[in-house]
Length: 264
Image 1: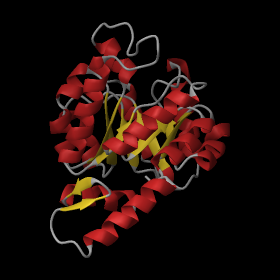
Image 2 (image 1 turned 180 degrees about the horizontal axis):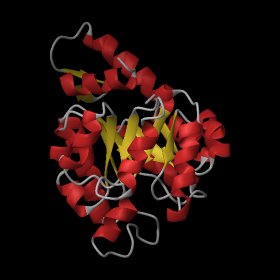
Image 3 (image 1 turned 30 degrees about the vertical axis):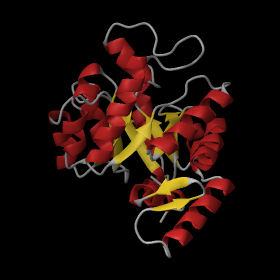
């Protein structure tokens, strides 16, 4: 990944690949849910024929237990793309073939089983990061909606989000926040991205080019945050141990947060 904004692009829309990559930091060429079953063969051919920067391309492949999965891997073998997102990852066994093929995997924990096993999945050597997904999670449990009418996540979705984040970070891997499906709700996206950045996520996925700029802005430190971080780190250079700064106690965890704001 080259930045915090990851944009999904349907695999059968090769005409959109370049535009998607131009709008975001990385593009996720989707061979799974964004493509109708009858269109998957054509989508694979379009992915195979593309020539995007491999360092900025992620290919979402179908779940390991489906008949489409080996066909997706045959397609990837014809390309230079080596970073994949595995849909509906539910066990370490799902990852073994990708590991053997030398792929870097972003494991998508979007079912009850996948979330429950997030720690095991994160520890697999092929995995470079975890992402979670609200809608498939709720569907896997026979639920009706991941959000309340006002747009807030239900507690079960918030639990899954937290669990996947902590599992990823405990394993020293990347953590990617889920998409905000209401494209017109820029304010809601801003709130979620701000919380994702503050909580420790490394990136947020999105489904429309207009969302990428919002995500970049949300992950960037504000001038006020950067100025505070500079001040507190400067004070720490002359104040050993715990000290009081601008009315608050500062210790090493706070200093680590300041360094994170400045990317140090």
